Length: 273
Image 1 (cartoon, rainbow, N blue to C red):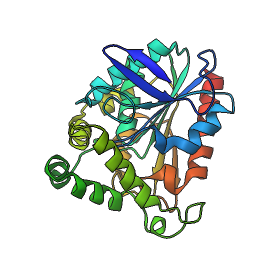
Image 2 (cartoon, rainbow, N blue to C red):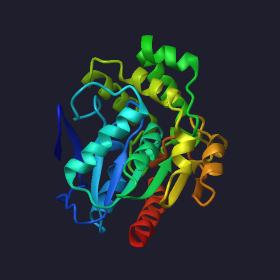
Image 3 (cartoon, rainbow, N blue to C red):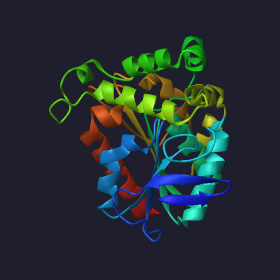
């Protein structure tokens, strides 16, 4: 689905169903150097079980045009315009990694329409090491390799996915390379810089007026569960779910468990709104 947001077009995958703004909408927001495809299983299920779905490609990623945006605040402003252009009335925001910060900030800007926020593989502050920042700017393939290694638990290296020959880390690496080829801008560096510089997370969390979920991987090295201390303090009533045997790439490593947690949360939030 193409959504007209001047001066550039926004792309959103709708889960195989026509988008209907009259239904509660689940908006899925990907992380750094990714696109909507990381949510393949979850979006199709939501779309066929009572939700309209918008799995967005952020500017400069996937099929959305324009340059990557340099701050979480700019991404949140852009997403708020997308939701308005699509005619969304009631929305549950679901974001992974960088996307979790965008979801949190968007909830602050669009509080009247947001009835729930799910933060997957999140942290705040979401600081990026100087070594990884430098690699993303000057040696992008090195950065892709590092993130691929650090984003997956040990079990993901084995043939553990539900399909013969399916290689979870290899798929993640190819997606980041695909995003890089699709945009000559330094997407990875821009994304990481936005995460590193974002300073409004605690204030945005304290201002939340809707239910929140923290969905975390116990073996996450990129955003370890202990790095959510500030968010937990700011959102004492947030639901916290930690998945055993999962690193940062929760949707690929534990797809069924992620779906179960997200759908239960979203259904409760939409019903309560």
